[in-house]
Structure formats: structure tokens, C-alpha cells
Amino acid sequence: MNDWEQALSDTVDLVPPSGIRKFFDVAVSMDDVITLGIGEPDFVTPWHIRESCVYGLEKGYTSYSTNKGMLPLRQEIANLYKKNYAIDYNPAEEIIVTVGVSEAVDLALRAILNPGDEVLIPEPCYVSYKACVILAGGKPVPVPTKIENEFRVTAADLKKFVTPATKALLIGYPNNPTGTILTEEELNGLAKFAEKYNLIVLSDEIYGDLTYGGLEHICFSTLPGMKDRTILFNGFSKAYAMTGWRLGYAMANPVFIEAMNKIHQYTMLCAPVTAQVAGIEALRNGEKNMHKMINEYDQRRHLIYEGFCRMGLKTFEPKGAFYIFPSIKETGMTSEEFVENLLEREHVAVIPGNAFGECGEGFIRCSYATSVDKIAGALNRIENFLKNI
Amino acid sequence: MRELLQLLEHDARRPVKELAAMLNKPEFEIEEAIKKLEDDRIIMSYNTLIDWEKFGDHNVTSVIEVNVAPQREVGFDAIAERIYRFDEVKSVFLMSGSFDLLVIIEGQSLNKVADFVARRLSTIEGVTSTRSHFMLKAYKKDGTIIDDKEDDRRLVMTP
Image 1 (cartoon, rainbow over the protein chains, first blue to last red):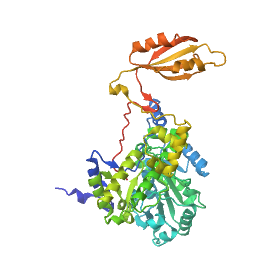
Image 2 (cartoon, chains in turn blue, yellow; image 1 turned 90 degrees about the vertical axis):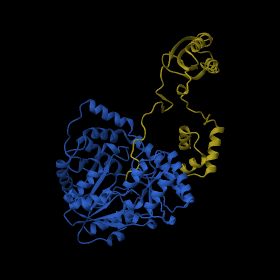
Image 3 (cartoon, rainbow over the protein chains, first blue to last red; image 1 turned 30 degrees about the vertical axis):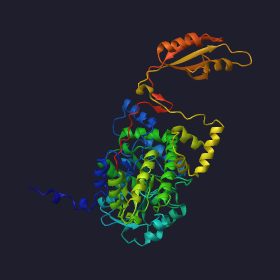
Image 4 (cartoon, rainbow over the protein chains, first blue to last red; image 1 turned 90 degrees about the horizontal axis):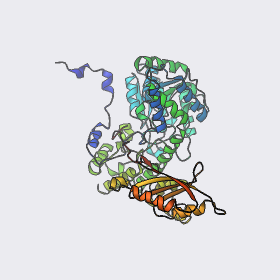
């Protein structure tokens, strides 16, 4: 009898298991659960985008595209960055279309890391960063941040963890799970740090369109001297509510893009062409719907922030993405105990903060990408839960 | 103010407390704003969109194109008023194009609506012709899709 566990690669063993799996199984077994645990928009992809995909199928867009993606799509991406951030990316050489940002991050890490290379990752952060670094043969180096500083990372924080093996810095702002965004001054601090230690910056800006309260997103590549050393990621999932289409892209200097394309052509070949057709429509005509969605997220953001403040849970006002990250330390429970008990007693699903890094312990992530009625209902149940512990 | 109106247009029953939180304003300000919008008749009424068909009522709705001879000084307004005062009439619009007034009528049966058109509407002085169309099925009404099958298909927890 073979022991197949023994047959698995050592690298796979190093990847931590999902922090939400066990709660997921409980949550799906309840029919009256209200979930604030979903990391994707509650809007369905706007109709004009879906319709363009249907039209594309009717017209026979069913074959492979070029590895880097359809040129008209790359051109629209370049136009978007020119318009929004006044930055030039050459669609022929500096943009690659991928199967979601997830693939783009994986490609970038595999393209730049040698065994033992270290990647600084401010935490809490999206769950796949650490795993992708490990799978690429690198060593993830978590850099903890604190609620006192609204989970912002500074150059001083990073400096404590830099070594001669540090190759890159992987950041994601606006942040999942905290909703934190960084100011220009703070980003400039990180830019100078990257320059000083000659680091490649991987900047995941998938939530870049979702900022609130008049705060504009700053694209990392636009900072002085940063375009050349930054691999920028964005996609269609959040701003255009297109998660299931699996469509993202990376932008960087031609050397990085070419190296990423080398891996992409052998492992993925190209992003789904049906999604690419829809992506062109999203970029050409999707702005109005996007702003409508952002406006609704903003209203829900106020509602949920006010709700947690009223309950007396320590939290800060999130300025981007669609998450809020309140502290539950005062309850005396760990994140996982809190999530488990809340789910069991009040049938509300949230994500334990420690799923996003050790320093997320003592917090929960709540997504406000859900209807106002559900948010209001969940807040009532959480308030009730807190009263009875 | 626009945002408040949009929220109320979508759901008139949303509590003031929630509206205030969503718009990041104190409750009294929202209450005052609603009061003023009502007084100014910008908010005209709070209605409920009901699927009467589902409830079991099988009313008949007719869209009628009406041609009228406009009258001196009052134009189309006087005839429009004579029409919209009837309870059966749900909506009346002055139109550009090949007819003048668009009248929407609801009645309990085809006969009753036809009777109304023949006896009441077409006999009004100044009405020169009518053309009736009966609605067979409503797919979308006032921005709401009647039989919306797009449920939330997301997984219950995702990172």
C-alpha cells in the first residue's frame, strides 16, 4: 500500500491550510445564516458587460488569444492608466493579461525568486501572498502592523525585517482585510525604502478603484523612480464585479513581463478569451456602473462602521476596499473562538483575523459587500451576541 | 439630498436611523430633510410595488394612444384633466409623435376596460381618436425585474 502523503512535494507541506475551511462547512449547513464573510462584490456583473460576452461568443470568439492577451484589451488597460494616473505603459511590452490577479502574483513571484530569496509582506494581508511566495521557492517574511497605526506599514517597520536575502516587497493597498489605504507620504516612505535596499515592489492594487471619503488611490508606479522596479497588479473582479470571470493583469518593465509571459505561456497559455472580450467592454463603458457600486459600498461602509462603534468594539474607519476589521480582544476570546461562537449562536459568518496573518489575531474581518438589510440584520445579531457573553 | 431620495426611491421603509448612518448625517437632519421634501411635494407619496398577479388578482392593463384637438388657451391640459380624474386611469402623459396623450388604464376585466374606453374616454369632447393596446405580461416594472432569477450565488465565506 502506497502512502501517498509521503509522495507529496515538501513545498506543498509548507503551505498553511486555509483558515476558514472549518467555519465554511458549518456556515453552509445553516439556512438562515447572514454572511459578512464574502470577499467579493454582491453585485452581479453589469448587464452590458455580460451581453458583450454573449455577443462575442455569437461572433465566434472562442479560440486562444496571444499569450499576453488581446491587444485591444491591453490597449484599453494602458488608456485607463494614462487617464486615471497619467502613467504610460506600452501595451505591447509592459502589460500581460492573466487569469485573475492571483495568477499574476504567482507569475511575478516565480519570475523573480530564487530559492531562499525573501519577500517582505506587511500583515494582515490577503491569504495567498504567503503561500505564493512559498510555492515560488521563496521565503515569506511577515511584517506585522498594528491597529494603533490603522494597520499602516512604515519603512521603519520594514527595516526591522530586511536582510541581505530580501528581494522584494509585496503590498496590497487598499487592503484586504483591514480596509487601510496609505497616504502619498507613507507610500513615498516605502518607495525610498525599496530604492535604498534595491527591492522589487509587487503592488496588488485590485481594490484601487474602491476608495472613499474623497481619498484618491495612488498608484505605486507613479511615485518617483518606482515605475521601473514595480510590478503592478490589477483586475476586473472588484471594480466591475467580475470575480468569476478570472481576469486580471500585471504591468511592469518589459524584462519582468517577458519573464512572466514565459511561465504563463507554458502553464496557462492565455486568459479565457470570452472574459477578455467582456473586459474590453468593461473598460470602455463600465465607469458609470462602477461609480454607482462604489457609492453604494460607501453608504454601507458608514452603516457598518457606525454599527461597530455603537457596540463599542474598537475599530477604525476603513478608507478602501469593502472590509472592516474590528477588534474583539475585549471579549476575551480568540478570533477563531469568536467566529465559531458567533456562527453557532447567532448564525452570522465573519472571517477570523488570524487567517490574514498572526497580527490579525484578536480581530475579525467583516465584508460590507452585501445588502444593507443583511448588514443591518448582522449588526443586530452581533450586538445581541456581545450582550450575552 | 439626491442620495437620500435615491435611497428612499429604492426602499421607502428604510428606518431614519439607517439612512442617517448610511449618509453619515445626524438623524434629525435626515428627518428634517424628509419633512421638507414631503412639504415641497418632491416626495409625492410612498407606494408599494405589488405583484397582484401573484396575489391572485388578474387585472387588465391597457395602454391607450389618444389623439385630441387642443383647445384655445388651455392646450391639452383641460382634456388631460378630464381624463386623469377617472379612478380607472393610472397614468396620463403628454407625448410627442403620432399621438397626443398616453393613457394607462387598469380594470378588472377586458370588457370593463373596453367599456370605459368606449363610453367614457372616446366620448370626451376634443378626443378625436383612440387606439388601445392590452398588456399581456409584465417583465420589469419601475426598475424592478418581476421574476428575477439572479439569486446570490456566492460561496458563504471567501477570503
